[in-house]
Image (cartoon, rainbow, N blue to C red; front, side):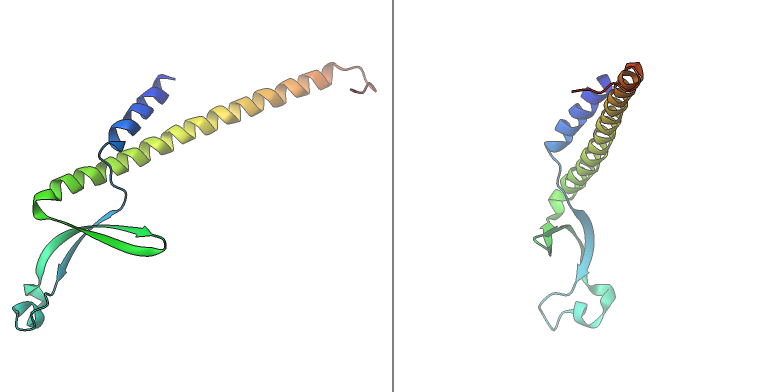
Length: 122
């Protein structure tokens, strides 16, 4: 129970700042055909950080301004923490469910063994 409360606390803390998606650094060419980025791939603009995700079957990207890069990294790390905690919490719930099912099965087997041979239940 203490472990479950700890995991729930981590979930709530992470949920306050988390952003689901990936982080991608990309260099790009600008729209100016006279810019050096069009002639030399090493002179492309960037790298710029983007948050990427899939929505309704389509890939999406959100540009992260330079002054928000650390915030984006923290939000991404919070998502990873949220996911990890949720998986551990679900595993604990699954194990508890398994125990309850085994306990119920054991009770049924014991009651079946206690009945006199040939008796039926109505």
